[in-house]
Structure formats: structure tokens, C-alpha cells
Length: 229
Image (cartoon, rainbow, N blue to C red):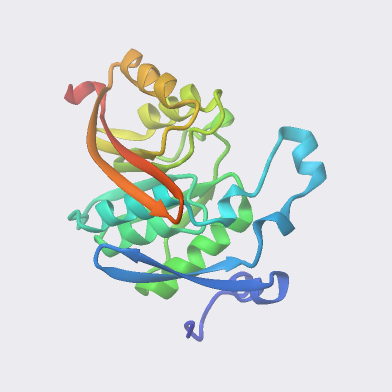
């Protein structure tokens, strides 16, 4: 992969800090090549896990992110702002950048933000803005967005209300959130939490996914803010 010659030092440093691999993903009739750590398992940190059960899910390419990136890349984002909650390697952020959105990519892992910046710049020529975000202490100064995005983030029960609160806080009154999920443990509670906060929740798409014997259906939920219900 050819990277810009003026790549920021912290992004160049990923070559020294990680053993990198490249993965090509089909998105919207084309391909996106992502740089990833060679193995997510190699990134597990016992201290982080003991403190808050943190695992490096960000370092994998998940089917939900592929499904959501495809849908987002077909939108018209010119003159609009998008926020991704849990950006990981940046695939959904890339879809939003390709659609013309001004993107803020957020994650709990600082390294995920670096990969999202580097992958976004390599794939689109545009570097997303990034912000380290802990949903348990959601920053009040992010502002509001026309589009809020999240893919496969509901794998812990406590995330149902945390993600719902993040969406309500960051969604513009006439905005829309798109949440892709393969049926994780917190999905139903998340939908309920959004509705309890006055949001309208609808199913925008169901996307089948198959990899050998593994099969799942990715559901894209569309959430609109209380003011637009």
C-alpha cells in the first residue's frame, strides 16, 4: 500500500509497533484495503482485562462493519457531519468519508483511532478526525451530528443504555443513527432503551452474511431523534 509522504509520525510508527497485515473487503461494489494488526489475540493485555475486561475487538474486521459501510457509502453526506461510535479499524468511517461526510471517528482504544486515521487516509485521501471516547463518561463537547453510526457494539448487556444515551446525546434533531448488529446479547435492550428515550426505531435492512459454514443476518436499525418522531 502506498501511503502519503507527509503521513503523521504517529501513523508512520504503526509500522514499527505492530506486525501488520492487509485485508481487502468488498464495500458497495468496490474494495477497501485495510491495514490491521496481524493477530488481535497478540494484543490482549492482562492488565487492561483485569481492570475493565477490555479486549481488542477493534483489531478485527466484523461482518456488521462491512454491511454498514456498504449502506453508508451510498448516502449523500456532502455538507453533513457523521460520528462513528467504536470505529475500530475504520471501515465504516471510510464508507462515510466516501459518501462525503465530515467524520469524527471515536473508540475506547487509542490504537484503533490511529488505524482508523491511517486507513481512512489511504482509502479516501481524507483523514477523519478522531476522539478517544469512553461511553461511561461520554464527552459533552462533541456536538451533534446528522448521522451517528455503530456496528456490532452491543456485545455486553451494559452497552444497551450506554449506546442509547450516546446516540440521544450526539444526534441532531433531524438526524439519523444507523446501528448494525448480528443479534448480540444487548440488542433488544438497546432498542427498548432508545424507545424509552423518545427515539423512533425501525429496521432499515437485513443483510445475510456467510463464511463457509458460518451464517448470520446483520440487521441495520435506523434510529431517529425524539424531536423528529
